[in-house]
Image 1 (tube, rainbow, N blue to C red):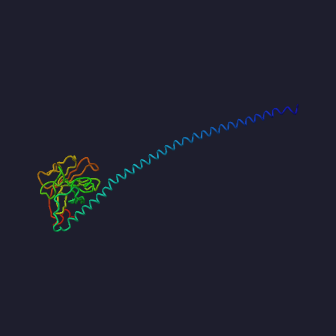
Image 2: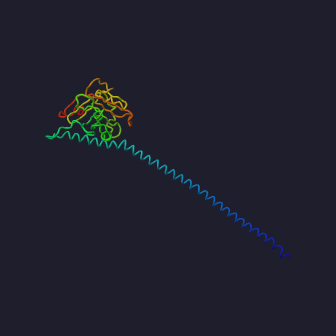
Image 3: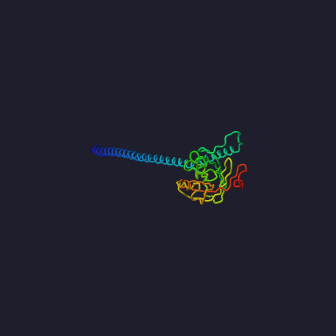
Length: 277
């Protein structure tokens, strides 16, 4: 009896230890499962955030690309069109002068009295602005103005005189901005400034007389034989320069008028307006 009695408590304690160990294992397993599920949930959030990051990057790259395209377009309009137009205009002016300097060919037909649309026939000089630009027939953007040249109002209802005419108004148009912008600074002309038109046969010198800072594009009276608003009161030999205003728009037109003061044959050389320092 004495030897057997202690065995029961030892067996009870062993059973309780085993039960506690099993419970601990089950609790640890549950904790691991909960921890694994939590990590899965935490990983799901970065995947959603990653999509937003990718979307933001794509939008940013799109805006950057659009900005670069706009910058290239502005650069083309404000700079490269001038490069191309000035190159074309310089070539046209040089070709005209070379043609005029060649001796006449015996038996060759006389020069045409009228010019085809887009054909160059004169060179406009404005010494104050250091401007030398060819003048072509017509005011077509594609054939004349966008090539850096000045266009003569010479067609239809807008037909105006030629410099050689004994009476009338020689009216021309030119870009103020882009495509060579020959008339960008004509607003700086003041009464008395020289404007010279050079042709195959003669130099025609005008003096700037007056200006109209702004008028409607529909106001064609400014290029009449006696242009309205110019201050001229009767027939004469006039020149009219027209361009767009304000700058970088085509909302209105700016007008500059001049009166002829000298006609000089080419055989006598360039007038003082072109030779004086």
